[in-house]
Amino acid sequence: MIVVIGGIYTGIFTPTEAAAVSAVYAFFVAVFVYKDMTLSKVPKVLLDSANMSADAAVHHHQRRDVLSYLMTSEQIPQELADWMLDKGLGVVAVPAVREHRAAARRQRDGAVVDRADHGADPVSRWR
Image (cartoon, rainbow, N blue to C red; front, side, top):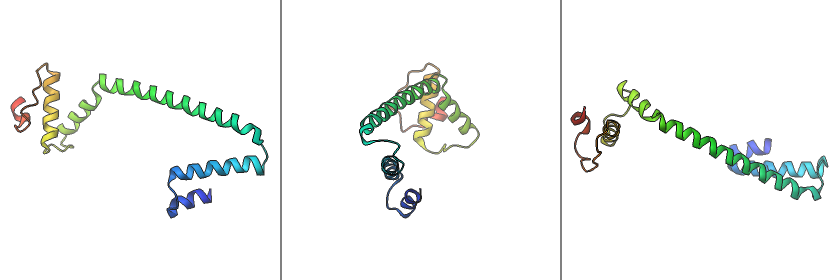
């Protein structure tokens, strides 16, 4: 642990590299110090580990897809942005933000969104 944290804080390696160092250290300790694992079991352990990592990645991706669907279908980002801008918590002075907000409002209200008028002030025209 001292090597991992010390290596990160001193800049010798990144947190990702520290994870690799700790995995090599754990392998060394399990095989040569505690002798919990023999060298003949190493390929099976590596294969099982890869399978568990792949399963975790697939399940994480599926959860993320469900969350993205819910956020989109319930228009949570748009509602949150509208609330923040109404409370004066957003950056209203940026023309791109105003244009995006106005286009989203027009599209929600059933209007055909024309992107050719980026230079005009869409908020005052469509409120």
